[in-house]
Length: 127
Image (cartoon, rainbow, N blue to C red; front, side):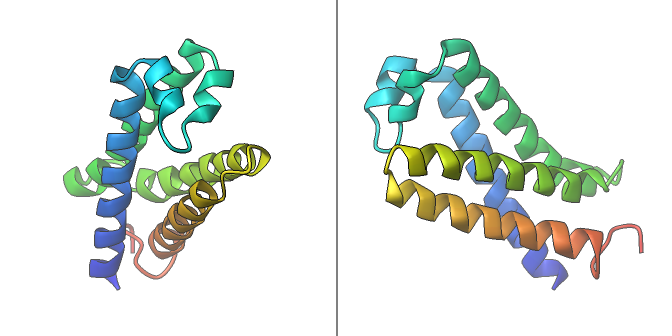
């Protein structure tokens, strides 16, 4: 179970990192042209960049605290925050009728729920 939680957290960390970096470095106009990126056309540049920065921080928060054993409770806390972010993303994509993006969001949400459940519960770092 511990190995599965590490693998899922690693995959989520990669998704968070690359999604965040993309939002930080790719111009908003180009993001808006990408599949399921149309929402960026309705958002301010500041919002998109802030979301990107939060995603990069989430990538750090889902892995680094456990690796360095400093505040490892931040791993499940980060996973819960990711769940909330995915609920917002799903709402946005549903409003825009972007069903494929919603499916991806549901998968990421389920992965984050698994990490939060596992790290708050049976495979807690504090136990």
